[in-house]
Structure formats: structure tokens, C-alpha cells
Image 1 (cartoon, rainbow, N blue to C red):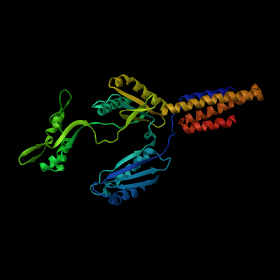
Image 2: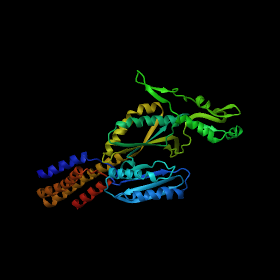
Image 3: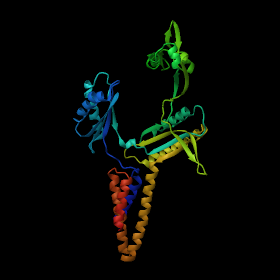
Image 4: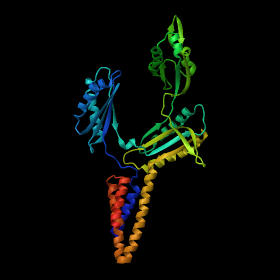
Length: 401
């Protein structure tokens, strides 16, 4: 009897401390290698980039599949390792193999970009949609800045793996060139591109530190601070006359209009109709492998509630569109509740049929075995997810039957 209660106590402690999540941990190792070759066709990319890399990557021990994709200007090689291969060691072997064969890359090819595949942190556990309650001129940029500020505040949150923004619009200078004026001045578009590119590639030279421990730069601080500064940039000379950017283009300060990944949010009225709100920015949050999704989600939402007053002042609302931590917690609590009901029903039936001594012993054996199973799973660094919940359900059903 004492041993049975000890097992049950260990199981309860393990159930409280065991990490909870919606999806099970998937041990898949792999990576993606991307190489660009500007001006090359898909057939050329396949011959000089994709196939040579595929042959070299297949030499790595533990590689299961290699899939190459060739398109104009870029080649992509997807690599998958056998299940059970060490992820860090596999990624290191992939990177070393690609870099060892850099001398075989064609002239003009970029340095290969090796991106490890980490499916555990690529699936977010929490998604929050931020939207502006009132339409303003600077709404897309202001919304992005506020969400980005909240995102940066999450840097100290433990067990947080990755945060990603979707649908955001960043601030930028927009230059709309008048092609008729361009033709009138007989200026090529490449001249405009070259003049503007120089603004971002020429950096001041760092000379030394001052007594106030500040960097002294050889140049003018923040040369381009306004639309007027950009309008007065010299882009060409025609017949001895200087052509400014404002002569052939319209310059404005706005957001990245070339970003077409927009998202919007709406709400349902009492009469069943839908009212569209403003554009939204979605913040997706992923956790580290083996971390408790419930704890991570609760800590992020707690920080979000602390940010509530600042969001309200700027007219920004939010809606939690995904919370795997809450779903996992509800699933575990529901399972425990139904297990308790089943144990009570079994106890009443067994005591009525076998007597209270025999019935009590058999009744204790069911939760004791389940508790031992949960404790062993906890000691082996397992998590409670939909797969383990199903296994616990089948086990309890078998013992109950």
C-alpha cells in the first residue's frame, strides 16, 4: 500500500514538472544549400552548380536524401539525414563539405549559403496579430516599430528560440522615376541606379576614439536625414548642367511599397456581418526543444499584458491567433480529470464486487502503474504531447477494461 502511494506521488510530481506541448519532438536533421549565379539559365545552374554539389554532398556519411532544384540565377540543394543522426555534427559536416569544394564553383557564383533545417523551432507555439484600431497615414510603419519594440523586449525570455514577423512594413525612402523626364534628359536608368547605390556602399572611415569614448568618423554625420537631402543628390550631368534626383523623380518618405506580403484582420459584428480592420503584423514565437510550451506562452503573454497600456495609447490592438501551450495544458488537464473519474468508477465497481480490501488494492494498481509510466517518461526527458497523451489514454483504457 505504501509503495503504491509512493508511486502515485512520484507520478504527480512528474506530471506537474513534465514539459507540455502540442506536437511531439521530431528528430529530423537536414539543411539547405543555396548558390546564386546571376545571368545563368536553369539548365546551366543544373550542370555547373546543382549536380556537382549533389555528388559531393552524397559523400557525407549519414546522408539519406539529396534533392536539387535548379532555376534561373539560383540553385538550391535540400539535404536530409537519417533519423537519429546528431543534428549539430550533421550540420557541421554539411558546411565543411560545401566549403571544401568552393574551388569547383563557377566564376561569378556567390558564396554558398548553408542553412540548417530545424523543424522543432520552425513550428511556432504562439502567434499574436497586432493591428491599428485607427487608420493613420504612418500606420504601417508605426505598427511595425511598436511590434518590433515588443519583439526586442522578449530577448530575455527563457527557452525562447525564435521570433518572426509577418506582414510588416518598414520605413524607407520611395523614389518614383518619371520615365518621360528620364528620356528627355537622355539619361539611362543604370546611371540612376549607380548614383543611388553609391549612397549605401560608401561608408565614412573610422579614425579613432575621442576622450568621451565616441567614434570619430571622417565624414558628415547622417548626410541623408530628410526627403530634401535625397532630392538634392546629383545623378548625372547633361550639357554642363547638373541633374538632381528631384528633376527626374518624385521622392517621398513612406514604407516598403514593394513588399506585397500584406495581412488584414476583421471582426464579426452582432448581426453576423464582418467589419475589416487595418493591416496587421503577426508575431510568431517558437520555443527551444524540450521546453514547456505552457510556460513559454504564459511568460510572453504576461509581458504582452504589461505592454497593454502603451499599445492602447498608440491605438494598437492585438489578438492571440494561436496558443499551442494553452491547448496542450487543456488536453493534459482534461485527461487527468477523466482518469480520476474512471478510477472512482472502477473503485466503486470493484469494491461492490470484490470487497473493499481487494477492490482497493486493484484500484490503486491502475493509477500507480500510470504514475510509474509518467515518472519514467519524465526521467528520460520526454514531453507530454498528443502522442504521449494518446498512449496514456490507451494504457488507462486497457487497465480499466
